Length: 513
Image (tube, rainbow, N blue to C red; front, side, top):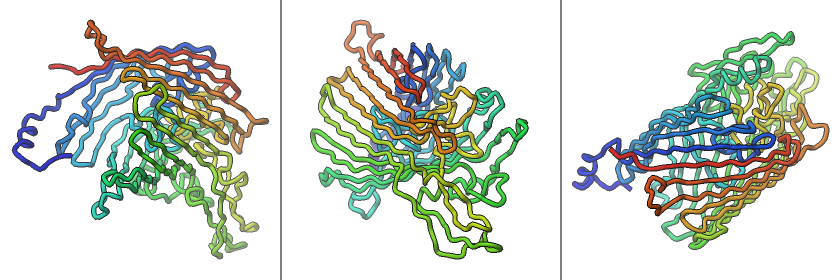
C-alpha cells in the first residue's frame, strides 16, 4: 500500500515515467476444424474467435499495466491491442484500446478493455451469466473499485468492491450484414453495467472462511432499432438517449418506444445475484458459489404484482396481492484448488438450470380478466433489442447458444432453456507447464416461443496444454509460450459433430528505450 509522503516517496514521484515497464505481446493463432470450430476453442475468448473451419490471426499489443505504479497513491495504465484475422467477423479487430488511472483504491478506465470475470475461475468455469468473458469488450467509461476495500470501523471483517460504467456497442454494421437487413437488428445501442460485492471475512485474523455476496446488472438502451413490419418493410425506431433515459438505465422505469397500454421498463435490463462461500487453507482451498440470473424486475425479486381490478378499474391496483415465483434458474458451482505445483491443481464442477424463466405462461391483465401472469422471460432475448450479444457472441455464459451459430439471419438466442453439467480440471506441475480440460453435457429445449420438437443434446470436450520457453541460449525465444488445444462437439445444439485443433504462439517482453 502507498505510504505517507516521506522523502523517499517524493523521490519516487520525481522519477515517475509514463513509459516505465512498457511491455509488448505478439501472438499468432491458427485453428483448423472439421465442421465448425468446437465450443471451447471458440468461447470465453473475449470474442476474439471464429466458427469458420480455418481461421486465425496475428495480434500485437503494447501496454503499461497499472500494477507498475503499485506503492504510489496514483497510477497510470494504457494499452493498444490489435488483431489482423483471417475468416473472422472483421478484417481488423481493435480488441483493446484504453487508458486508465488510479487514485488510491479507485480506478477510472476509458476505452475497450478485457475485464476479468468475478467470483469464478476464468480458466475452468463455463462463464458468468451476466458479466462474462465471451464477447468483445464494449468501449466505455468505467469507474471501479476492483479490489476489496476494508470498510472503516468493521475491524477488517467487511469489504466492498464494484464498478459503474456506460458504453456503446460497436457491432451495428455487422448486425446489418448478418441479418441482410431482413430481420431485426440494432445500431449504436448504449450499454450500462454495474456491480457491487460484499465480502465478510478477515484474513489478518487468520480466519480461513469468507463469504462473498453480490449483484451484477446490465442495461441495453438507446440506439436505433430496425425491425420488419407485416409487409416485410424495415421500420426504423430511435430509442431515447437523454438524461431521463440514462436515469432509467440505472434505476429502472420508463418504457420502450411504442408501448402504450402495457408498459415495461425501458431497455433490456438483466442481471444476476451471485454468492460465493470460501475456505482458504495453507495448502488448499475450496469454494461453493451460485449465480441466479434474472431478465426483469419480477424475476429479480421472485414476485410480481397481481391485484388489479376489473371493468373500468382494470388498470387500478385494488388489492395487496402478489404472484410468487419458484426459486429456480441457477448456476451452482464447486471449486477446489491445491496450491503447490502438481499435475492436478484445480477442479471445477458446475450445474446450470435455465428452464423455468418465471413459468411458461404470460398473460397481461385485461378489463375482463384481472389476473396477471408474468412468465416466459426469454433469457438473453428482448422484444426490441436484438439479444444480449456483441458481434454475434452472447455477453454472458456461452452455453446460451450465441446468435453467431444461426443460419437464418436472425440475432435471437435460440436455445436458452437448458440443463447443463460442466467439469473443468487443470494443473501446473512447474512454473512453465500448464494444462486444462473441459467437458460439458447439455440438454436443451429451445425457447418458450420457438421450442424444439424434441429435446436436443450436446457434449463439448476440450483439452489444452501450454509451455513457456526459458533458459535458452537464443534469448529471443525466452518468454515465448506455445499453446495447443483440441476440441470436439457432439450433438444437435451446436450442429455437431465438430472437431478442431488450435495452435497459439505468444511472445512477450519489455520494450527498452
